Image 1 (tube, one colour):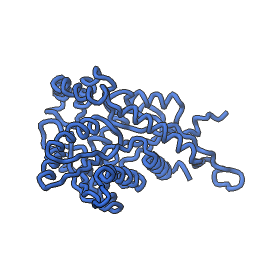
Image 2 (cartoon, rainbow, N blue to C red; image 1 turned 45 degrees about the vertical axis):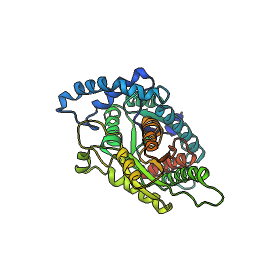
Image 3 (cartoon, one colour; image 1 turned 120 degrees about the horizontal axis):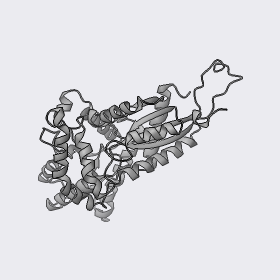
Image 4 (tube, rainbow, N blue to C red; image 1 turned 60 degrees about the horizontal axis):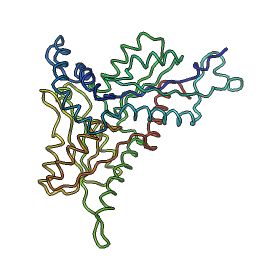
Length: 354
């Protein structure tokens, strides 16, 4: 008797993760700073001791920041909501699998069976951890798995580290996987970003326009998560792919824009200009209306809700600027359609669908 799981394709969404309570902040930071792919803290044998020291020193300040955004990171809840929405649209799409066996070439006697999908979510640095979710997927009997990292632009410190951990875990399981490395220029993803940027610009227009005034001039600041410069010097494509995403956006949207980097940490040289310095520079140029677009993030977390919405917004106000943020993609229908498109293209590339 054929097992239903044999016709099920698993999809695994991978994300950074975040503390699910104030008590989880310190262990989350320890897990984060223990990853040598993100930042190399001295010789390898000192990585974990130094990570413990940093997480202890930064714990109080970081807990205070999370306290201002609800006492936890929403990234896990959002990722699970994205997984649920993606599973629904994939199972409505009527995808048919690529059959194997001696009858597969007969157009008369053999018809490919519809594929059903089950979408999972796992986190790199907090629960549910990759190793736990892979075990769950195995228990569910899934034999084929599309892996999609929710970092649109590839970096060894994000997608690379996450897939390396996945590789360690999944080597113990009899499962076929296909990993999607990056999707920074997927056109549905670009459309989703363009749509949210337009909405952000309209926020200024609706509040500042009068019957006889012209639309206010809004400057868009793309803010990406920073990385150590050394990674880029060693060939990491992250910056090129960030710029590639922006280039696709400005093909569809006539805007004035700048690029900056946020969320640096640790005693190494990081990508610049930093977002706070860029805000100061734009204020000095007379920019009054600033729309920040978090270009490398697809869901809300501490970098959007605290850094941009609280720190940078307060800084801009003191500089005489109005700062608004482009809403994160989260479960926006256009973004879920983009994820569907990315998964289906991955399945075709893997040879799993017609």
